[in-house]
Image (tube, helix red, strand yellow):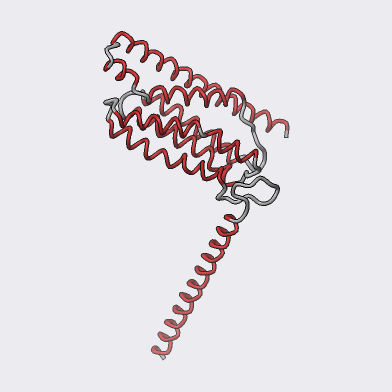
Length: 243
């Protein structure tokens, strides 16, 4: 009796394991089918049909994200010396930020807008800007409170935007677009080792002016970051009242 009971239990366990394996394989197959389905569609061509998740606009966005670890490694490897690695890091950041409008423009003009692209585009901006700010703070070239303030605002607003995306869309204001431009210019300026260049060329007197310009740019970026963040939340509150 005991042996029969043990054999039955063992058989039941094997059957449960087999069913679990079958369900896992079926789930994996469905996932693969979804990936293949999303990859189908227009990649470059302009039209009204379905756009592929692997279209040219999304590829540019992914490349921008991949720029981040490369320029961060170069920046930290230079260790504040202002050498060739720093110049290359600055160039990669500038290219990554400058192409922000390229992927969006392609997506809109060629009707290649996809949910994946809508999700990845702001992530690319935050990864590039956030990575640069953290690296500059690690190098002691930017106060940590500035980095923390900007990151909290950017990540917080992005999470809030995604959380209400199904209910409504709160468009980016002109102030928000100006904020992004000033942030990009300020960080690009700080990444470029202009003080080291001026010092090496014998223009020591220009160094304080170069540093001062960087301070002014980052102060403007911080002010716009705070003001536009509050404005965004106020717009969301107004929309809630009208609903």
